[in-house]
Length: 134
Image 1: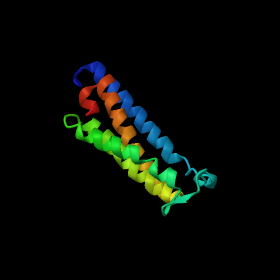
Image 2: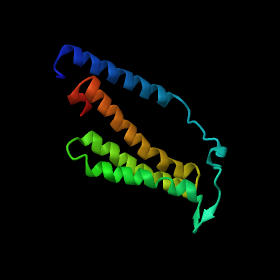
Image 3: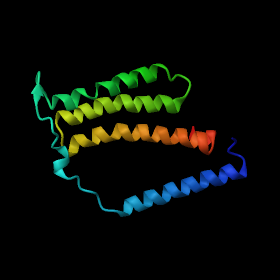
């Protein structure tokens, strides 16, 4: 598809308008407090000096998949960012689970947001317009 076609321009503009309206709506909302029970995980054990051991080491597959994906995603920047986000999710989530609290939760969620944005870019590229997705 070409961005220059009138139908694609309308689709991309509609998507951008929806995105802008969503962002404005979010800015008008007050912050959402995180329930502190959210940080109380079932596995509270410390093994080999690592608190919440299984919650921390269960993120190793994210790191492995991220590294493997990055090694094979040379041609497509969106796929590279997707796997980079997966890799960073492994590290960010491990960091959060070492000391679960509101401050470390940011580092758990940020890399996932990067991966979700890459998935959205790929969907835009495939469904709306290749140039807009890139």
